Image 1 (cartoon, one colour):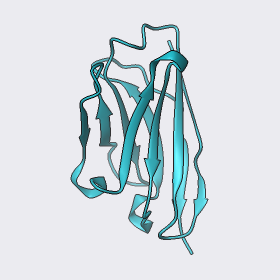
Image 2 (cartoon, one colour; image 1 turned 90 degrees about the horizontal axis):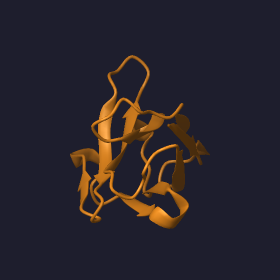
Image 3 (tube, rainbow, N blue to C red; image 1 turned 180 degrees about the vertical axis):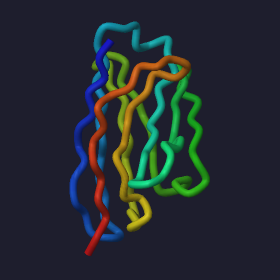
Length: 112
């Protein structure tokens, strides 16, 4: 199983980014997929998840600003991030829920 994230970068406060995670070596469609993030010196925390039937869940701090989506034909899960804040700065990781399958992470830095 391989999960590869992309789309991170440096953005100003209030800006937007869209992360992508491409999965391979697994049956993508039946699985809940999730995004987590880890800031320096902090534990990894849940950001959002999307189930096989497209039920979405969000952590409180990102609700209303981030949108998770998936394209099963492309084995890809996305995280669209709007109105970014400096506290969103972290490495963002893709995860197949209930497994120990993680991507390598993509860095998001929100700074002026």
